[in-house]
Image 1 (tube, rainbow, N blue to C red):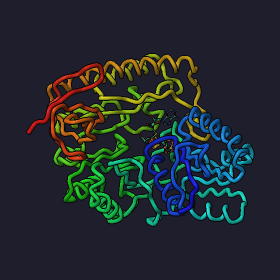
Image 2: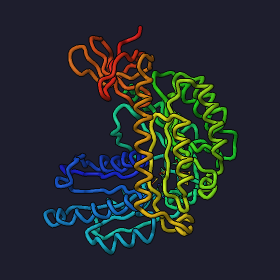
Image 3: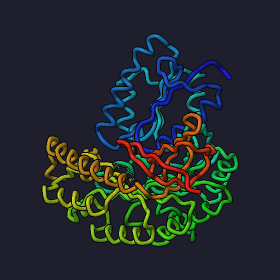
Image 4: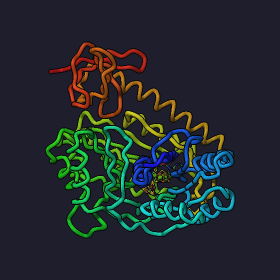
Length: 439
Ligand code: SAH
Ligand code: SF4
Ligand code: F3S
């Protein structure tokens, strides 16, 4: 061990959160320890995102803000990696604008971070290395920081090319991990009894296995994992509506270990816009899937992503989106203002929407979401939820968490931390739910 510290700044989605655990693995392996204060760090790593312009601007600002730290500590190492620096032009821009950034790489060569670090420490030569393809590497160290939740990558990349989205350009084509490697990793986690939730990660998990050319499917993988003889819950993200098959819905319905939550991003409630987005489904098809899910899994908790202000989106298109939100009754939604991404088809579409109008629409949608999620929380009163005991608050009071992330206070009980219990929700004060143990 050395006395040097590292600080990783993570932006973007869960994929990046998990990949930061891999970056941390390389650093821990070399004896560095974690700090969340940049001013105490000997190495700062920016794990970046470029899904919207606002993300990129924020990150560039935060990289710039490191300059004074480098003055105080000339030995400070600064590394930038992830989706934003995977764009070659952006990587060059970072290299030119921030001479104090020492190591720059992308998403495809995260597994080389250890080598880059060793090379830089030995030679003090700046490194910029961007590759154009992920080569699966099962030998990457990991330092997990997500408590009892174990993230597990099942696939990388995306083949969908939704016209607004940068992900296929910075993450490459779909590539699935071998089922045995996935199962081994999960068994390794569960056998420590430290991990109680396993969350499978991929940009489009429903197409898991398609690139392997055998009969492995996502549903088979889910069932195989859920059959492992441990007490845990299995979650996954993200599902694309066009690829969500009946056997996946059946797996969720029939397997008590699979969480009754589903993130099914629809993006828009207008068929015209969905077509322009290249989403490959219609609103009617999406609603049919939702009906099927609700019939087979009555207690399902649904969430979704929406983009407002896509090029040419009219008031009518936007109202169709609001109608869809009301019809489905999501437990929560994420709403984003469309952000043109250079190199994607939609950035060149006519009739880009004015920022003020996007802002107005996103606020309407967020207000609607607040009303609906409030209503959903109210509907939880009187229901029985299978929850994980997160922690003991004080003597006989506990904080437990539902599958869909709501916390409940359970008073006057004797519960075992990190066990699963059935809780009847009997009260709600503001946003806080209260419940009792059901034997
Ligand atoms: N693979 C996932 C996640 C993609 S990124 C999926 O397909 O759902 C997460 C969300 O960011 C998307 O669902 C979309 O709603 C939003 N998003 C993607 N590109 C965007 C853009 N250019 N502008 C605004 N939001 C965008
Ligand atoms: Fe982007 Fe579409 Fe792929 Fe999701 S499915 S990552 S939105 S291209
Ligand atoms: Fe995720 Fe952002 Fe990359 S959302 S995949 S970190 S562009």
